Length: 372
Image (cartoon, rainbow, N blue to C red):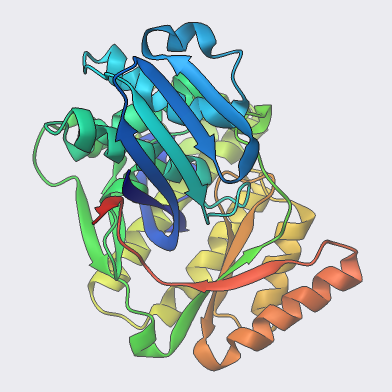
């Protein structure tokens, strides 16, 4: 068997902007999902995972649609990728897939996208070498949306495929989605070590699940707000004054988050592009958390406690990452204060009666690739 890997991601800034055709700025994690794969000539797809030792999934390549409701939920991600390749006319003779993952599940770090993208790059190399990165991202997204039932945008899959080591990925989702060529994304240097900084991830242990209704409800609310404003997407609104035309206060708050978050992405990207001290983006990260908490209402008490404790202990900024309703917080910290910030968050969690958080430092890693 050959080996492929795909990373999870954290978003420096830009939550819930991707499906509103806006801007995002993720990095790839050094944590990856491993996919070991080999061609089978039996017409079957066999999938096993070291995280699910009791499940051995076997399905016919031609019967994947019919098998969807029978197979375990986790296996719908890799099977969905196979199904999407087949639906697009690529001949899959059969494939043997073994999975192993180090991306925490339910932590808001895109473990599912890492899984889908690891399988997607393996299938491309084994069966469809002419598939482009852009097509690969859309295959992985379609697998999650249509087969696994997770209503994600393009952010997670784009980060897992396109990110490069040492850089943040600035992605204009509208241009990336609708343009066949031209500049749609940019690799922006993100070298925290040079400035004596670290990016701390705080996994609250409070798992989130995108197939639950909260994420889909936020998408629907954004669509409704855009329709009320008479624009294709909230990306087309660049001032909060324009939002006063929205009658429903909930829809107005949802739209305000998206409009201000897009502005935050552009500001952070400009600062990093110009070589500014990353400490200057700290307050912007904290403002993003406040917006997700108050306007988009996808934070939780544990996420709020982690972000507040980190800033109180000296972090330059902190915010929740991912779709929300659980997951993780990132904190931008001076290297010498990272341990103290982690301890402060842990102590806050003990006093609040929350589970012990997991904390670790991340640096920008490479995107999905085969390991020779």
